[in-house]
Image 1: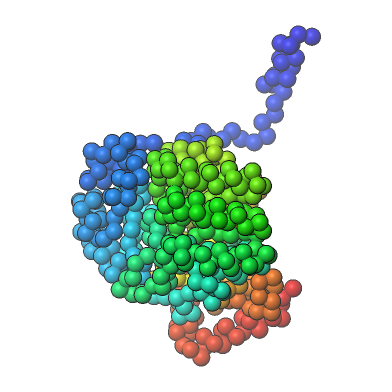
Image 2: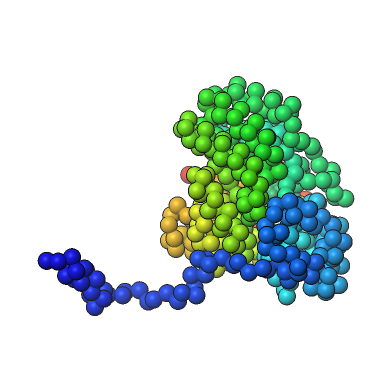
Length: 464
Ligand SMILES: *Cc1c(COP(=O)(O)O)cnc(C)c1O
Ligand code: SF4
């Protein structure tokens, strides 16, 4: 039989039985991330060409750090009511303000109130909700699990190294608002500067603890480390025999991918560390932070392709936010869009209890629903785990693994046997999701104590 004949037999269309309906190619939108000059809709940048926009230095220089700068950039794209609303939002927000031109250009200015990127970075006074009464500033107790300033050692074999306290943008939902960014009218921050002097104590601690195999280098944001500092930290950690893997945590890829494409010194430094790690059989990777498919563009694709070619693994950690990524469709779009550019969805965090962000929080039930819809829709290794970072220092728990969950009071209770044995950790759904009676009860100290006590009691009875 000739090759042609056998091909004919194998390829005969009539023998294919299409059990599944054909997919509309338009539904596979993640394969062609946008490459239009979207930033040119911003009046101030109407004449900025792609080469200029692609320069990380231009992005840095043109970052928006005050409501006045915002107004200058967008001019009459948004109404004066909207700008006033943002001004009120900024005055009440405990975060410093910083947003990259890249992100500003991606906001849909036809409908800024509903836009998922606007919601994450530009607070508006009219949408703010008052904080849950159980909120404290360092709700994750990162400071009380710190043997030396800037290092959190909570889990047995891994530690969180806060290398610096600045970021290329400031996110409203930031868990570390106790440290990150400048002081604001609302909050006085603790200071974690990038300096070898502060870090040397941290390295000493890591060296003295042979059980530590895994280090998260975060902050702040590793994007803000200089190339020289990436080399210093990277080589120092690789020198420690028991450190087997570390990750540089940066939101950079999601908010300013231009740095990967134009800051060659920085990417080369990262590559040098990754290459040395690989030779020594240690993993050096990046953990990034895309929250919606709207943040994925041709720039992100090019940047992620470059890192992929350099053999640097990228994983993603998302913060679940109301009106941003809490529908089945938005979560699916995010997971497919980032998987397509080789960024692996790793965690979706139920929003921590953070000052001034009650409008962004969602319920534990919504995390469970999203997970149910996503699992099975794509590869298991591209399906993130939905976690609650248990307030009080319990660490990350699978959102489904609560010992008890009262939908009426919104209290879910978790245990963390290998982190803090015998302790119970409670998370609180946003007040908005509760009946008005229960909302009122949370503002009453006696009823508050009762609701929490009941939930813990039930968890004690139920738990496996
Ligand atoms: C998240 C976190 C880590 C890393 O945990 P993984 O589950 O491995 O991603 C380490 N230390 C602290 C304090 C953390 O919050
Ligand atoms: S980039 Fe990360 S550390 Fe910085 S403000 Fe955003 S969430 Fe916080």
